[in-house]
Amino acid sequence: MTSPDGASRPPARPAGFARTGVPEADLVLEAARALRRTWGEGLAAHDLTPHESRALRVVVRSCGGRHPGGLGHEHEHGHDGGAGDPAPSGGAASGTALEEEAAGPTGTGAPSHRSAEQGGRAPSDAPRLADIATALRIAPRSATEVVDRLAARGLVERRPSVADRRAIEVVPTEAGLAEHGAVERSWTEAAHRFLTPLDDAERRQLAALLDRLVHHD
Image (spheres, rainbow, N blue to C red):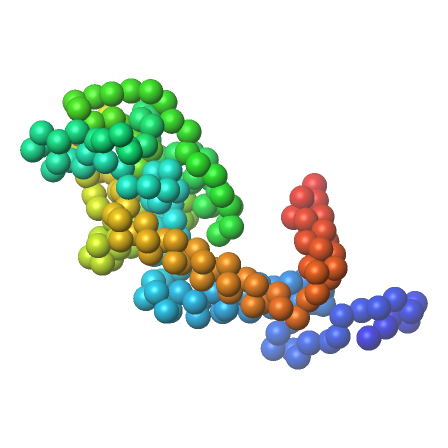
């Protein structure tokens, strides 16, 4: 479709799709909904809700993508973390991982670590429930319910924090790490399927245009 000045314009959408009255903005919103639907179909195969998949991502990435050694019950039985434990930290969830989760589903990064050692088990960057609630932008009670469901499936475990024994951290299990990897692969496959109609040049052009919009002051 062209405007009176000859410029190309996006095709008109049915009234039911209009949300802003600006065709370009409405198409961006519609594309985002379509991408979420594609992603939701992939999540269904893993029997996870969007909040559950995001919470699992926060837990795994905050812990550096591995299962922290020396769980609380192991320490009670005299077992320390082994050489495969993540580098120790001050006990709070990684700001980098949490900030990137709040920014979107495709962020990457590893948590920062600070040296410390207490009681035979090093403090970790494992998030607490409040950290997960903040990252997902949901109420703490809702975060508790999400973690409860993940724990019931054996994907995460709760343990007392070394830095503050009154606080509870959430760490991934080996099963949780495997599930997280599978979910991330499903997300990548869904994104590629969504972009299939575009060739490489069009994808680069789309990325450049969206980047300008996202970073526009």
